[in-house]
Length: 163
Image 1: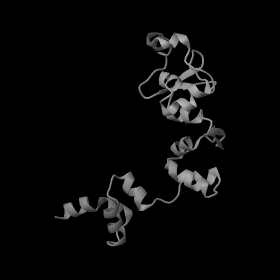
Image 2: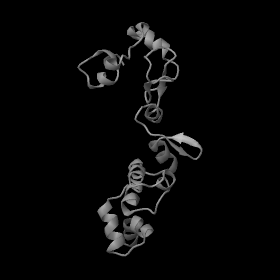
Image 3: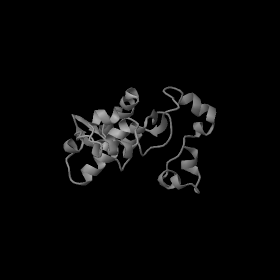
Image 4: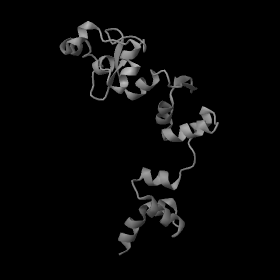
């Protein structure tokens, strides 16, 4: 927070300090900052300027936020009306259990957000990821050994039981 606002040598300075974002004087003392922001703190969260994303770091304009909240609070984040809520693509992907990049790719190809967020038939690569398997091994079992997906996943366990 301090670096973003005051260190001109940091890449993030252009988006914060250069734009006039400051840290309130009280928070220049870390103990005051820690006291004022202790409520809601978790190691998995980051500090977000909210509700005024263009405002300063100060009491009443910060919150501890997860990555989805952070993403929604950025100027460049596009929100979509999905199932009655304004959501960003990572939130939709999590809700639909679809890879984020799949939805981005589908939207880029011109699909509606509803169509882009509809699960499709599983691929061998997706199944391999889901079961923590090597893609080439699974692909070989399905295409060369003509095993069903279920058989291909359990093939070694089956083979070992036969011995």
